[in-house]
Image (cartoon, rainbow, N blue to C red; front, side, top):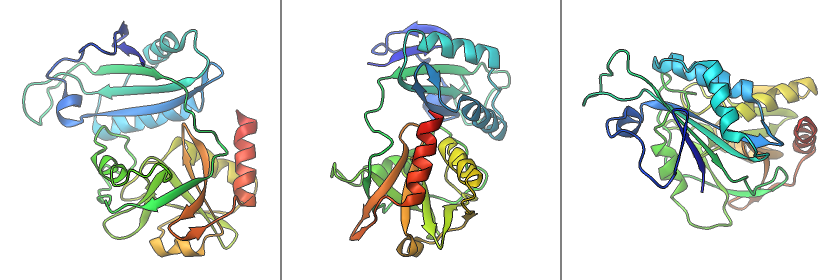
Length: 272
């Protein structure tokens, strides 16, 4: 059972606690971050904070106070070394209707979950998703609370041997996994979708691009067509909790764990 902190107070996760008129519940009017607690510290905390602030600016949400944010995080993780931290920040309470009331007080919900069992070196099997991501540059890269497309995609299969699904947008471009960013090694360059219309600028994605550049590995952030998968010598997915996951199989295609993937995984482990 998760440890839960609501607006600064510990609550029983099994008991109802949110107000019935909270806009996060009614409309998905909010944003969230999911972070890895490792050895008593949150990995890439500053990157998560910057993405949170960027999301608030894009959605015109009142920004959380950094001192309060850090204080509540410390309160949540006190006495714990490892786990998964989730922070949900909604616009707060409002009357019925889409228009938000000025001056509403945001809701801050924290949860600390048990550590993930998935390690950084796990090779995975993936599949294509039938669900397509809608193109909307106004919402692109915001980790908002509406994840219905990802939910539909992830529920397309029940085969536990398939770990993740790759998603295209409505124009057929490769975007991401249901909960990950995707990288391809093509012609000696590390290629990742530019996410200009949809998808999330993942914190791990950001740090892998930075790490690759520091190793003089060419990085090409650009539109990627689905058929380019056939050209890839290596494929891996990234996620803040799961780290780097090499893709071993997609349908009838197979890939080994490549040398670039191995180098980046080693760099991530060294950083940890």
